[in-house]
Image 1 (cartoon, rainbow, N blue to C red):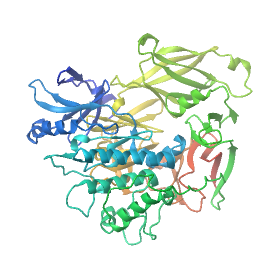
Image 2 (tube, helix red, strand yellow):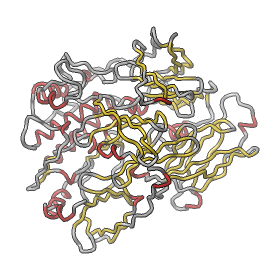
Image 3 (cartoon, rainbow, N blue to C red):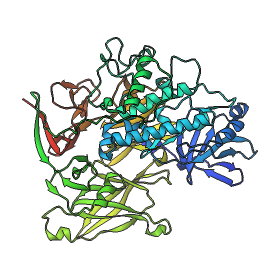
Image 4 (cartoon, rainbow, N blue to C red):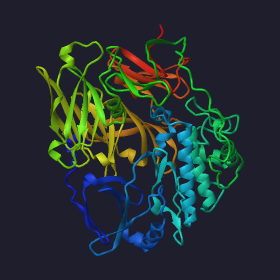
Length: 612
């Protein structure tokens, strides 16, 4: 389905009643997600869940169950606030506070952790708070049953436990659970099976891998359940794991022993606190060292004075001063110049997605949001040209661009295009043009596209949103944006996605039924049919490490250190060439500049090319 045939404005508001508080009208722009049992909306600081089968839920005693769950009060547990009623005063759902945070799976990946300075200390604090929350739920007589990684958010080191209405409490039993966290050695759901599930999820926060993944000589790749039944975990010395897995031998002694006993020897018990024993000293931080290789040339473009945090799509590297928590600096990789005019707060805003940087006719343009809740007339998008060191005065003297009125909540860039995201509109993705008129920079609206921001996930090169259970890919193509249906993704929860070409997308996702992580290949099957999943394979990867240059040559760093080289114009046709002995690991994050393909690692930005 293309943009022209997608209409998001036809749905009438759903009206629900909050006991003692009146009526709330929920529109499609309030839509958040579709779960196994209901539709989820977010509005005014609350999340509203409406059951797909409210009569069946009432027959199962959902109102009595919600009363029991409402009694659970803990800062890390998002418990129901009250029921939702229809016009006949029948229970049709419930509402709860809207929790902040990122999906817990983000904390599994080095690609997210490293730029955020989220290390062992922060991981242990998060895991300890998860332990205390599960312990509190048990004290209230609840069993979480299906506390898989997708039912947690992480707000710094504070977890948020979600999907509380599916918990087991009192006479209300539960049966649904993701196989990837299920204790296959128990026929019942108990606090001890919860602790096994907690062990699986928390270990991934600390180590970056499911405890029954990696390569085991006695099992097929992806045969998770057989490994779990046999207690054949990563603690088996015969298991090999990829280079992105963190050294879990540095965990506190008592916790490390408990993980080993649970995963490898079948122990079932409550875990110790993370501070129950000393923390083994972490391994020294890696030193920056340009790899040597017989197949790939590594030419250092620049060595900065601190570690690269990220490289923006406009070709500007953000790097942090010595000490890990130092202030941010910016370096223009294309002009090979520092950008001293960008202040540390402006750079932090860029790093956290609260501002955007792009190239225009006058150079680099810094765009920011001015949201004034009390005065919408003063809300909008502004910005200014960013001079580099030793730039001539005419550029440094340029004034700020005039405010472009906008109610957007976020700015994003795809390639060198600037977009505003507005969660209050069903055409919530708007491209902002940045033009030069004499000495002035002028902002204007170029076009808008169907986009449900609350139900969307934005990746580096594209976005995905869910329209009442139907996933759509949002792909910047040429001077436009294409919105294509991808119905097959309804069976998955996306972790990462990358647009290799307008007709070919790679994705990493959790299977909704089995909890396995898969690498998906999606190809466009036609203007009306949208995208289809053409290949599915189990994987240990949690982030894609792909780049495509302006000539359409793409590279992907695989978990085993091999480099896949391909043509984006023929992507998906099996034309990929594997290059071994490259010296690369998943920590070498690849990206494209007009001058070629590069990666960042430690303090270095390095250009790569195939040796003759």
